[in-house]
View 1: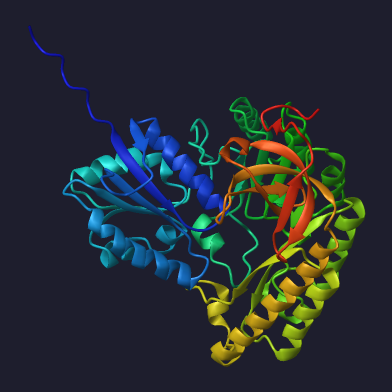
View 2: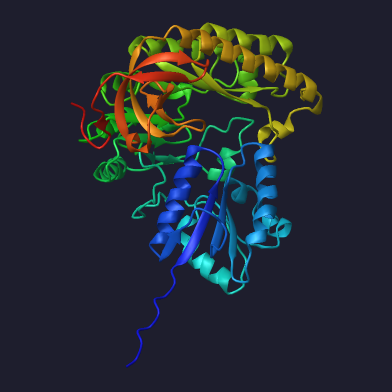
Length: 452
């Protein structure tokens, strides 16, 4: 009697992701592409047949971190292991990565993920490939992402950027702006609802400039918000110039749209904004904030700010601090300027560079100013009631982390069975950045059910 043949071992892939939400979404696409070809995702590099590092190029230290990590990962190399670098750093450096890391076989930019199965097969035969061609038609249609998050879904609606701010590498690593068709975006939202998810985040480099040639971002927001089963719609990151009256009215009138806007300011100085080629003045940014707040009561407002851009004077930095105080952001992502090869900022006069110690002092002052203002605002919210969606376990203690509609982080006691549920809480305390909460309702609402 012959024995049954042993089952073929399925191949495994491990992806390590750095950078923004778009990179997270791209990693989900890569997993989906490879799953369709018989690969299983694994949570650790040890023993994986394919190891991919999905990279960010927005700042120098992000790239240096990846170079160091590539060295660390080399210890997992077997004779047949395929190492690859994907994402923005791969697009920017191309074949230079093959020269810097001899164990890397693949360098694949953001428009090359559909070709991953073929590139991996060639790498298994000993070939080394670089795929960094832009494809202005690529939106990864017909690829089902393997989603990491069991609570919300990233929905990329736009790729690339046309703004070309002088400090920014994104137009050179992700190419020109192009948008998916409205029907395709809505179809993906319906798919994630069928999977039991009720919060979606619309992604684009300047997401509110989205247009498919027939519809604008206002139409997209209305269409997504009308999908049966969607309770929360978020989007990131918008550009201040693209908040038309139509878009703001849609944000204010669609019930599912959360009361939060991440509005990158970058600087509070008109002079610096002009040098950054941000295409708005300090006064125009303030006017945008005023219109958003007038239309959306209780709006949570977060931002991005860069310190030390070449030519930034003490008085320019003082204007940034005064803007932070006057606007009263709920939080901010703050960065020291990082010169990126290939960007227009490299052509600014060397004498305009801000000294490292000055930049460090300004950064410290900015962080203190933002946090102080946020803490003052948060203290006024103690005792308020909020709906939160439990997203995951907190880093410390036996706590869970939830998010309010206006993007406040709230920690409550509980176990993992509550992840994915909507709870009503009262805000009981704050560290200045996060809140603690006490659950008010006895029976939580599952995230997969429509709101009562």
